[in-house]
Length: 68
Image (cartoon, rainbow, N blue to C red; front, top):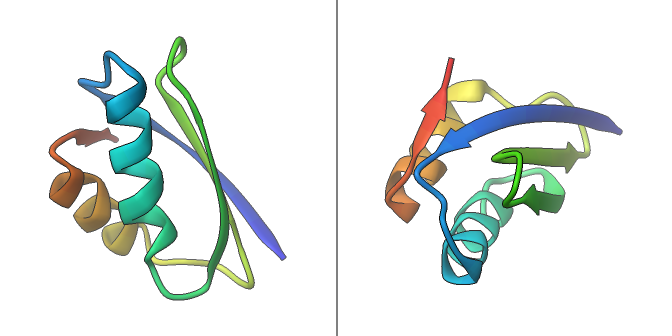
């Protein structure tokens, strides 16, 4: 198991949380996504390390920005 935490900009409501959770949860190998709206953090649990660019693409698809 691997856990990584990212910061996502632009989330303001429950719909934002759902969109990010759905898109990131669809990345191969991801087993759990926990989004904290207040802090803007997204914690991703996966079977093994997941390329940050795959997470970035999923966040972009949801309409938000992954901070470096």
